[in-house]
Amino acid sequence: MALAVLIITSLVVGLSPSASAADTRPYFPANLTSIGASRQVVVVTSASWHTSYATLRTFEKGADGTWRGVLGPMKARLGSNGFVLAAYRRQSTGTTPAGTFRITRSFGSLPDPGTALPYTQFDSNDWWPYDPRSPRTYNVFQTQRVAAATWRKTWAEHLSSYGGQYRFGAIINFNLPSGLYRSGGQWFARNTADTRKGGGIFLHVNGPGGGTAGCVSLAAADMRAVLRWLDPTETPRIVMGPTSAITRM
Image (cartoon, rainbow, N blue to C red; front, side, top):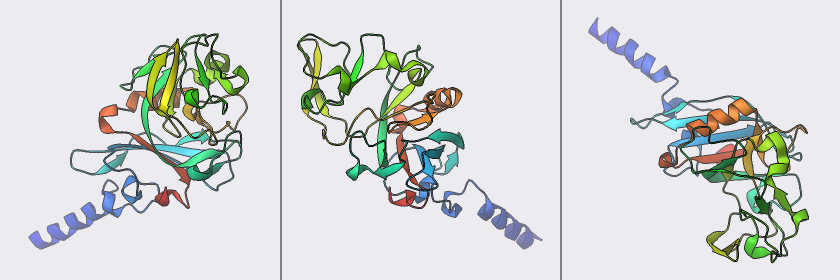
């Protein structure tokens, strides 16, 4: 009798959906190769490289080291031309960079929805430029446009002009510069971004036009839920790509 109970118990444990070693879904974190020490992972998958329709799921690792699903599946939209490998992504191509990236900051036109990430509520003075003629300000958030600015307005996002899309957002750390410093009312980067690849890749609220310019978008309620879940102490990462290639991202 004791042996029978032991066998049955072993079978139940082996079939448990929470057992990461037994989960063969390609987007499950235990099967992803570049998440490092992250204990929170956002995974965005699509049916092909060229579709703008995707699915977003979130996972977290428990104290016992086991991954479990938390939020999702959620309907998401990508760039209008789908995914492209991050190394080959180019500005103004309507593609979303496929790969693995940190998520360290968030923003929005509305007050902080309760995220643990650093949150910036922007106003009508704020811009996000990615002008190739101004590499030191490329992909660097600006709290104003001063008279001495060399970046062109036509190569920048005036954040307050995007209506409901930027009610809430998180910055996907694709092609971000480093070594930021402030001078003359502007922010500059000592280590500049690659001006070929584009900038302003965010996770944000759906817009009216369907596919994005390269970001990932969600319904407003879903975006708020993701922000409230993200915790910088868990080193969150986002992994993005077609389901067929997600384990290589």
